[in-house]
Image (cartoon, rainbow, N blue to C red; front, side):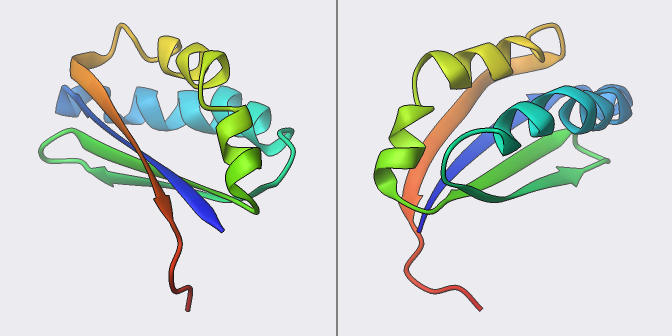
Amino acid sequence: MYARVVTVQIAPEKVMEAIQLWKDSVMPAVKSQKGFSSGRFLVNRASGKIVTVGVWETEADMQATAGAFVQEQLAKFASLFSAPPVVEQYEVAIEA
């Protein structure tokens, strides 16, 4: 399995807006992608730091969404970002 981790910084007062946007728009789009396994939306409400983790069955499935699809999803949050997002990809070595 493979994971894409996206870390973003927004103003703390915009956290609920980001949660709703992810729930209503991003997750439905991601769930429809081939090989998508699961997703997490982690938030520090005090600092406004958000970390999302999407898990894919294969590296090829994850890479198929790495370009335009990821940019399209990130664009939905563009007005909320206080710093550019950081996108990283990992192999899931252990899952419990």
